[in-house]
Length: 408
Image 1 (cartoon, rainbow, N blue to C red):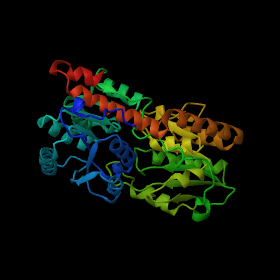
Image 2: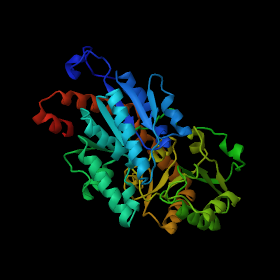
Image 3: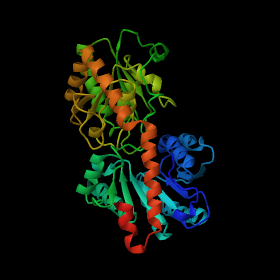
Image 4: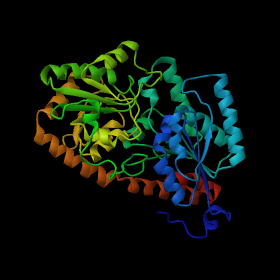
């Protein structure tokens, strides 16, 4: 995959054949997205380290042989003294491993990590925007998050937005200017494995007691307010009144975040005879094949991998027009878009697809073709590797042209 010359000293000013990249995220659950990306960088000749908060999901990062992992407790919410401790630990980590390039993402790791890397003058600093939590916050919290994003962007050489709409939104909020912001290709940090996620048979319905003849509406992701789960439940109640043979398949977990679902909604999900809630699953591929329609009613996204995975599986999606999600569906071709927060719109879109088998099949076929053409995983990862190689080439240029080269 790599286009680096055999003699890497030409680019890196050293005989070390393995330039070192440190990838940092706040929560261990984000590590789910890192194995393929880490493997691609390793295959291209990078030495890869990952730092994240503790948690069982960090095992994904450890699954790539040769990747160095560091567990560093970081709170997702404002935590005062604990944030200061995490910042000092990041400073020590950077001093010890001395990376050539850092890529930090998610709000807390993005802020603490990029500022620490700026203090250490890490040669190449990348702030990776996976989404903007600020979009669903208000008041003082919104102001704090907004200025945190701006500070992280200011201390970076380049801001990589996970989708084109996310980049535009970052510009509108004054987080980063157009010259400093990049989106690779059509977006997505990971692409989609078109072999793993593909149409086919699945034993999921039998496993969870869902009749073969039933219509299945699927959701994959964290079960939270920002993911639109309350509206999805309301829409499902409306759908059942017109399509009583439907099931709602929730493939995800109750996330204890600031936008966590209340007890009443959790009890409603757990006690509903037509709602199947699986909890976290390591491999969602068979679950997409059990769906007739995939729904992601989010209020904010970066670029939703789950919509790509559904598309590659030949399943049309109903998503919202919010930032990020609007990039993951071609309206009326691979699925349908509705405004966020409107249960009636979700219900009508789902019922339209459930009621027209030919339309579902046509959209499912178009969705897979579109996902494979634009977001096949090796294509996306190849662009990522080439991008980081070019950033490292730029680091050896004169100081007056370095930043310009990194952001072109």
